[in-house]
Length: 274
Image (cartoon, rainbow, N blue to C red; front, side, top):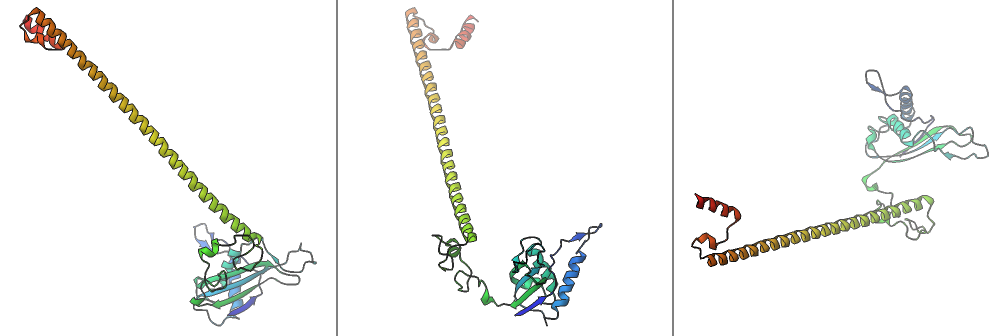
């Protein structure tokens, strides 16, 4: 483990800038800060770490001038710069000195605060090379394992026992996490129920529509069959009347004894005239 303090005010990693030709470059303030980090850390580090690295850092910013002297303790800094940008500038400054590549950093614990009374701005850095056996050491009961889904979803049922079973009341943040999880679960169940009801309603509407269409088709088929039957019966009646009339006239023309349409009768008359 390597622990050292850099007597320098923390600076965030600035966004890259571009020239008129479109070439990107790092700002002068960021370059000077990273160079100072390299110079100051070289005194405390003999050679770069080779394996996986855990980084613990405390960024101490200058004390606020508006802070009264009756509160001399440290205070969390909740304003800019962002903690992630501070970490990035420190990583780039330590690269090549504390480790060969900042990709070696697999675990980070960082805080940013305002300095206490009579305390100057500085950066406290702790570096440690860790082994694979230490993977997921942040667990529910300190068992050297990562939290499982059951651990995460099983946080508190009665609102008084926390994940570590310490028998204490939940903090505001823990209650907020639990309420969000419960609300998300209720919303998912509500969406599933609404989706199921919507599907059932659509199926019922489709069934009613199909039944209506089928009934309409059946009624049309029955009406068509009824009309065809009436037309058939009418033809039989006309043929019977024609047959009876032909018998009474004692006709010898066979066409007088069968049913023919009006068009065929006209054609036959024209042929007989000819």
